[in-house]
Image 1 (cartoon, helix red, strand yellow):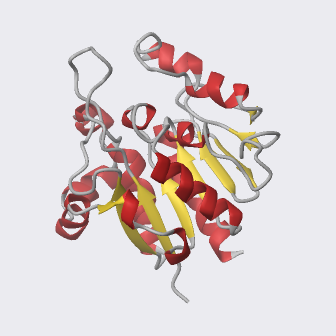
Image 2 (cartoon, rainbow, N blue to C red):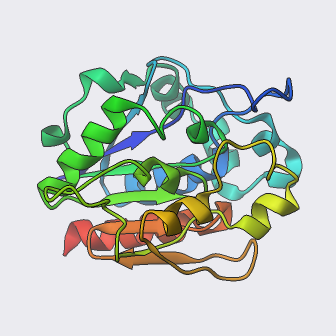
Length: 228
């Protein structure tokens, strides 16, 4: 049986009121995309607004380039799929086996409070399907609750972009929330590795990664969970 995963990216393209652009982080989409696709998983891309989502230009910088980002940029089929993301309001959890959220700073502004995203995550969770997110994207869990009305992250192992990493990129005072503080505030058992080192956390169907370097690790854990 072919597994299918819904991958949800941000539609938000402004970095607060800095006048700078933001969006999704290419490596955090590309690395999981190929790890899952190469394992035979069917991938559907979605975003709040549908259509072409904004790419954070910093993630397309030569310094941020990886084998996966190079492959993605040269992949006509992947780029066609990215240009036609489904609208979040039109996708249903029942059509997929898991959901994965790549980061970038964009989700901090739109997906964190997006009612369709929140309902979607809650539907995956309620039906015992894996929910995965990496880097800034674990912020999408901030307002999601389980069937008992408790935050999904409460008393569960979780990670995400750390306060020290946000500080290192100089955006602590720009972002509306800090991932680490918010997940702790919601009762999450937040753990982390060294800044910029690969680190992922799994608590049953909840799979999270700390930073861009952790995206492949998150996808590996997601694939294992789908196959379990």
